[in-house]
Amino acid sequence: MKIVSAEVIVTSPGRNFVTLRITTEDGVVGLGDATLNGRELAVQSYLDSHVVPLLLGRDASRIEDTWQYLYRGAYWRRGPVTMAAIAAVDTALWDIKARYAGMPLYQLLGGASRAGALAYGHASGRDVPELLDSIRAHRELGYRAIRIQTGIPGFDSVYGVAASSAGGGERYDYEPARRTTGDRPRPTVETWDTRAYLRHLPSVFEAVRAEFGPELPLLHDGHHRMTPIEAARLGKALEPYDLFWLEDATPAEDQAALRWIRQHTTTPLAIGEVFNSVYDYTMLLSERLIDYVRSAVTHTGGVTAMKKLLDLAAVYGVRSGMHGPTDISPVGMAAALHLDLAVHNFGIQEYMRHSERTLEVFRTSYRFEQGLLHPSDAPGLGVDLDVEAARHFPYEQAYLPVNTLLDGTVHDW
Ligand code: CS2
Ligand code: MG
Image (cartoon, rainbow, N blue to C red; front, side, top):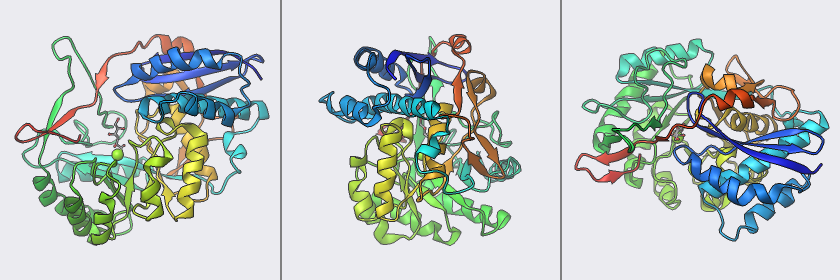
C-alpha cells in the first residue's frame, strides 16, 4: 500500500479550499481537507514543502505511525497550519484504508451508534422579522436545530448575519471571508460594542421563543467577543430561553475564563473551533467547564486526533459539536459525519450547506434527511474530487474581517 503521489489542490469553487489527494501504488485515492480560512496558502506551502516529500514511498496503511511522524518529527508542534496539514494526511489515509476495505469509514470507527447525526443550520437576520423568516426557511429545509444570529441596532454588519438572510438556502448562507480586490487589498473592518449586544440579545430570544415555542433547539455563537463576566451575564440572561448551547462565549485560549462563566450560569457551553489539539481542552474537560467540543477534523489533526479527543471528552461527559461551516470542505464535512455516526458521545453537527458551485468540484454522497445527516455507505469518506473541474476555479485571496470597538481598538472577530 505504498504512497506514490500526494498532490495539494487549491481550488475556489465559490470559496477557497485546500485538498490533499494521496494515491497508492494500486491507484487507490484518498482525500484530506486542509482548508484554513484566510490562510490557505500557508497550509499549501507547509504541505508542499515539508510534508509531501516525506510521504512518498511510505506505507499508507500506517496511519498512527504517520501521524506521530508528522507531529513529533516536525519538532515544532501544534498550531493551526501544522495541524491542518497533518489532518489532511491523516484523513486521506483513513479514506484509503476504508476504500481498500470496501467499507464506509464509520465501519472502521466502531460502526453506527445512531441512524443519523442531528444537524443544525444558521438562521440569521438583520432584525427580528428577518430572523424569524430565516428560521422558518431553515425549518422548511428540514433543520431540527437552528443557530440564531442577529444584527444589533445601529451596526451595519455583525458576525453571522448574511447580507440578506431572509430566505435561508445557499443564496443567503453567511460567508465570512471576503475576497480582496485591487483597491481593497486588506480584510474588511467591522465594528462592535458588547454592551449594545448584551442589551439587545435577550429580547431577540424572547421573540424567537414566542414565535416558535420552547422545544426548538436554539444555538448561539458569541464568537469570542465577551469577557468572562460579560459571558456569565449573557448566559444567565438567556437561561429562560433554554439554549442548546452558547458558543465561544470568550476567547477560547483562556481556558480558566470558563470557570467564571460556569459559576454563574447553567446555559450549556461549547468551545473549540479555533483549537487544534487535545491539549487546548485538558482543563476544560477535566473540570467539566464545557458541554460540547467544537473542533473540526480539518483543524485538529484529522480523524485519528479527533477520535482520541472525543474519547477523552466522553470520560467527562462532554459531547461532540463539530464545526461545520462552509470553510470546512465537503471532504472535512464527510470525515466529521463518519465520526458523528460512530462515537457514543455525539452531540450535534453544524451543517452550513455548501454551494452548488462547490459541489461541482466535490462530489459528495452524504445525505441530509429529516434534520439528520448520514455519511452514506459509499467506500471510504464517500467524497470524490473532480480534479479537472477544480482547475477551473483558481485561488482567490480572501480574508476574514477584522473587528474593532467603537474607538478603533482591535477586538476579537
Ligand atoms: C463560526 C464560523 O460556524 C461557526 O461557528 O464560528 O463560521 C467561523 O466564523 C468561520 O469558520 C471562520 O472561518
Ligand atoms: Mg463558531
